[in-house]
Amino acid sequence: MGYVRSVNETSPEAAPGRIVLLTTSHRVAPGLLSWPAWQALRTADAVLCADGAHPQLPYLREAGIGVAEASPTAQELVDACAGGRTVVVVATGEGEPALTDGLARLAGTGRVRMPELELLPASYDLPGARLLDLVQVMDRIRAECPWSSRQTHQGLAKYGIEEAYELVEAIEAGDREELREELGDVLLQVVFHSRIAEEDPDAPFSIDDVAGGIVTKLIHRHPHVFGDEKAETPEDVKKHWRRTKAEEKRRTSVTEGVPLGQPGLALAAKLASRARTADLDVPLPQGEGIGYELLALAVRAEAQGVDPETALRAAGRVYRDAIRQKEGEIALEQQE
Image (cartoon, rainbow, N blue to C red; front, side, top):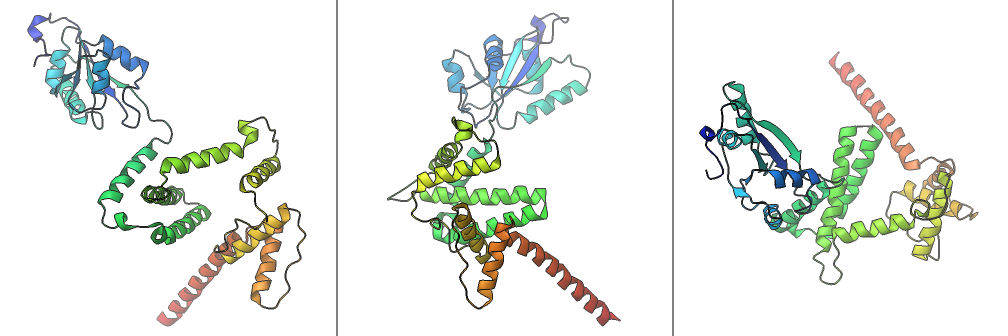
């Protein structure tokens, strides 16, 4: 290979050289490399890359870095380092595992004087970088999957409700692995709906619009973090939130924005919360029937800081366990 100088051209006692395996993240814009990476590239005796379509190559060449498109074996790479030379390998995929395995086997023979091997991350993923992968995967699924390509907001609505309930169940069960998975399922619903929204002919929006909107909202509703307001207690924060939310929504009633399609106990508690925070002394409607009794219980729970839905689910789990125990007792009796 053109980049390999014959080992015979160097003294047997010459330094074995150095191999730098340069890894980059595809989630960072090409060319945005770390300073140590640029130093290694500029001082290297040879820079190699097996993938001629690697996204970094145009930027390296524009910066004056000569890159040879080559896929050397472990022995060829060791030979290229003879005489104390430094060879930088711009890694592709998962960091050239075949090459590093070959170097490990070569070193294991004990017959080869191995060059120094350095793994140098040239770019790092920022927090949230894997969300870019999710967006790309969703784009492909939407384009190529016969089921996903036909979905609509209306058709997916039931899945959003199901996933939200499964998330709540994971939280209440205290299962960390299940919680991680269910958060992913909820996130999928957000990305899926955003992808569908891009195709709307009249009012399209993207996942970036969704993220941008919530970022703006969070900043506006946290003036004690991003502005000059002061908030020393959680109650101060709630006051800021309610005030800025009221300014944004310009609602004529505290009941506006309360979804009537949510579970009944949650609806009753939400209405009671809105009335209480607005200092509205509203007597409960009088009527007969279990609905009015449940309403009164939900309002009382909210006033005591208890989520009636959570409380009822907890009681329901106890009831479920009692049912299972009774079933077990009956099964034992039938076996005797």
